Image 1 (cartoon, rainbow, N blue to C red):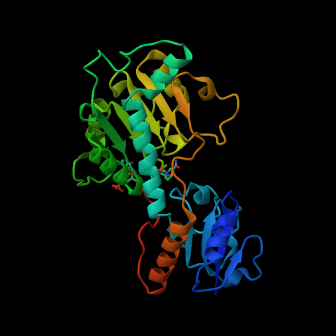
Image 2 (cartoon, rainbow, N blue to C red):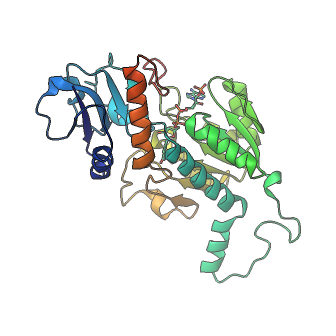
Image 3 (tube, protein in one colour):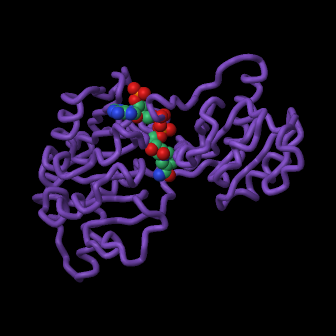
Amino acid sequence: MTLLLASTADSAELWAAELRARDLPKPLVVLPDIPDPAAIEYAIVAKPPPGLLASLPNLKAIMSLWAGVDHITHDDTWPRHVPLYRMIEPGLSKGMVEFVLSQVLNLHLMNYDFMDRQRAREWDNQVRGVYGTEPLAEDRTVGVLGLGEMGRNVALGLAANGFNVMGWSRTRKELAGVDCRSGGDGFDAVLGSSDILVNLLPLTPATEDILNSATFAKMKQGASLINAGRGQHVTEADLIAALDSGQLSRAVLDVYRTEPLPSDDPFWTHPKVVIYPHVASITRARTAVTALLKNIAVLEAGGRPDGRFDPNLGY
Ligand code: NDP
């Protein structure tokens, strides 16, 4: 019985090296060299080739190397009867906290506005408001959509740095220092209160296009958006219209409907958009392989690791 690493992603070599460096419970084979498909019990995958997982008859589990599993489930042939686990590992969560905290601070301190002034050679010491009345973190409310592995840690990290934090999830949570909401009313309350809105929802039929013109209209005028969830959460033309009208003042984007972002996409040149190339947080090979091997040990012992994908919920 065998482990398979099947990745067509950039980090395939790195993950293979990290796995080979460990004391593995079973032999490892690495795509494209799969001598005996029937021997594969655990498939560790990132963007596996379409049809591959369906061709492995004795799979016990599919382990995603990424937090999102859309790179697996968009293949119609993926075997739905095999438990699928998304990546939960401390490196990914810590990296997301660092990314969002840095962007919230950039927006709070209006750093991108100062960069605009620099390009215009404009000395303006009232960018943040009347000199001497500039808001502190405690004067800003940050709304976090999604309170899972990413959102929960981000919300706690923002609260620890002095921001007012509201969070929204499908089922209501209790998080120290975070005003947690759920449901439609909770969504509207978070939208209407947030100076900065952070999207960390998973992509499901219920969340696709959740950030659209109606959503933006419910937000405070001049609020900002950070999207590190998935590009399909945003109706992109509606976001551009909200930025052009001044309803939103800035958008920091890490994910897009089409990736890589096409060179003629209007986001590239929009003065109110900050572009990151899907790097908000990355699976760290060392901590991720430790988490994967722990999950395999739990499964082998008859247990149930965290992070199992629920096809009914879509995440
Ligand atoms: P989780 O599955 O751990 O958490 C999802 C959260 O969203 C949960 O709190 C869940 O609620 C909530 N949620 C799901 N559906 C709804 C809904 N319909 N209404 C309200 N809340 C909902 O996901 P992760 O935290 O691991 O990942 C979050 C997102 O971040 C994903 O889109 C992932 O792809 C993305 N990501 C992006 C990265 C990047 O570099 N840009 C890196 C890593 C992740 P409940 O708690 O009740 O289940």
